[in-house]
Length: 340
Image 1 (cartoon, rainbow, N blue to C red):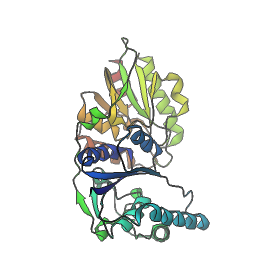
Image 2: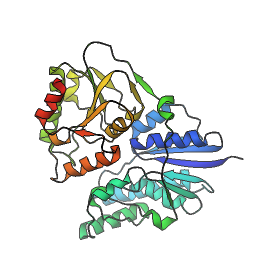
Image 3: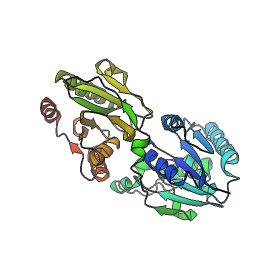
């Protein structure tokens, strides 16, 4: 009888690792994939028609930590999800990819750790090293209590920008270096056909303003201005929206091609692209490292909520791309480059 594995897909960046595990074990193990939070990731994996025992989407539903009734409703939902999917699981290999900002998966992992073998495949959590650690305050203590009520997990809350942190070392979880099978990018590729003409093509990763990161009043104006400049200097603009947030409406009249938001950036196959650009998306690192397309970040053009954010995101992209992502210094630097 075949043994079983469970894979938790927690973010779009996990997809290449999920598919690599699938390709490695599909002929010898019974595989289930649980997609947490991002519905477009679920749509993409579902579209691949993989041979799975189950493919399940589990959303976050709690809207407010201030409403005690909602907290206990969510606690009951989590208990029921465990009963439905995980409490009867034994002798199974379980894989997950991040210990940060995902209390839902953490709660499932604690329950699964009792009778199963769990592997932590860390491929982007190194970014936590860019942030300062803080001592527990009264506010974070209250959050810690709420998280415990919700999940039955005692989290670490030292890195404010990435709370909560699942202390996987408490659960005999083995941390492993993940490996990507490069063949998956060809096997599961999504081809984008663009009408060929003399204009250069830019692939632009775009998103509506996320208020926790950017100054939104300036964000939308600058993003609009960037695309307007591409059009002014004769570029075909291909946009790919954020998997969770989609595409901002104010730029659509200038866009030549919109790629469906549920398609992961790493699986796009587009011919004749001269430039790949975006702000802080990890997709830039993939194109910088794995293609010959000139890849630029616009971080220096935007205003962030915190004065330290720009440097942190630049360090993150540089580390993720092996220093292959280039940063425009200013708006004039950006325009000088696209003119040529």
